[in-house]
View (cartoon, rainbow, N blue to C red):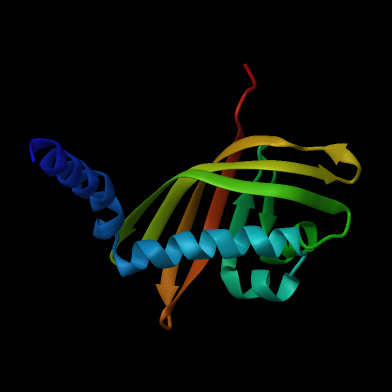
Length: 145
């Protein structure tokens, strides 16, 4: 009986973080996954909807891209992403602003150059007209050990 009670308590403790997620947190995690899919499929229309007008992206080299430049780069056939795995996602909601941090591990080439690796990222979203849009993103290459 004690063993069964222990297992039940352990299950509740392990599942509690998933149950505690708010609707906004779930929406932003879904958006992050949809974003990954859009990049892999070169889906400019999906990216156009996801990126806010004032969107700014900062890549691992420190180069910045506005919305049009980012869509052109992300939807380019010269960028080939064969794997895009998100992990260590953390979501923080501040009213109509959401911040998502995590790691994306990709297998990809850009203009023939291998850009594979793990990237720690921070994405900032704002909720407007009932939907979330990304206003800023920044990614840093995780140094291989």
